[in-house]
Amino acid sequence: MNIPEKFDEFWWEDENGDKLEHDMKCAEVKKNARFYVVRRACEYVTQVDEYCYHPKNAFVKLLCGNKALRKIISRGKIKTFKPIFRGCTSYGSEFSGKCIVAMVNSGEYSLSDAIHVYNNACERCMNVLLFKYLDGKEGYPEYSEEWMKCGTVCDYCRGTDNNIL
Image 1 (cartoon, rainbow, N blue to C red):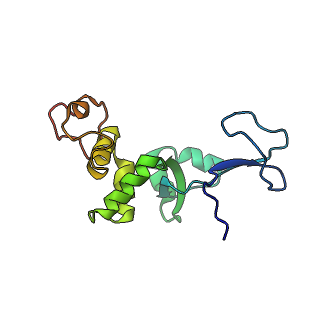
Image 2 (cartoon, one colour; image 1 turned 135 degrees about the horizontal axis):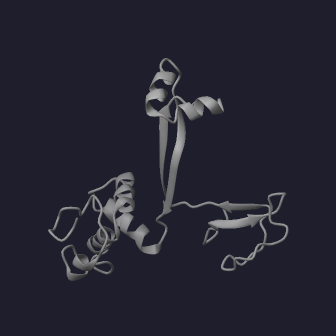
Image 3 (cartoon, rainbow, N blue to C red; image 1 turned 90 degrees about the horizontal axis):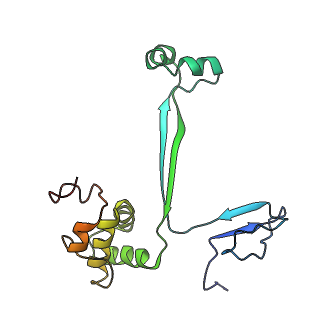
């Protein structure tokens, strides 16, 4: 097997699907570029789908904009899923990967739980996770001066101190 040392995360391809040589630091696009491909191994995706009646007729869609009418019109109709939001973030930095692995190795989290916790942490909590699981080499401790000054809040730290919303 010939596995590369570093994997490309994004690149340009021509209409035949061949990769184009390109300096990814430069925003200049080649003239024969047809496709932009993004392939990230460490990505955390959140998608919200609406489960309800989704009419195809434009006039009925307009009527369904009113909650009361939607309730009446949709009665007895088949409900379907329709994506209404998709958010994506990557956690492929050097420290995030090391932190997630350390969280799993600690025995406190499964891999999926560690990824979930890390990606839902605000900057404040992410730094606490880095400090705790990377043996104080990165981040800062909970309730430290830096922690108190940080202006972010998430479900993990909300209400843990009077100064936090």
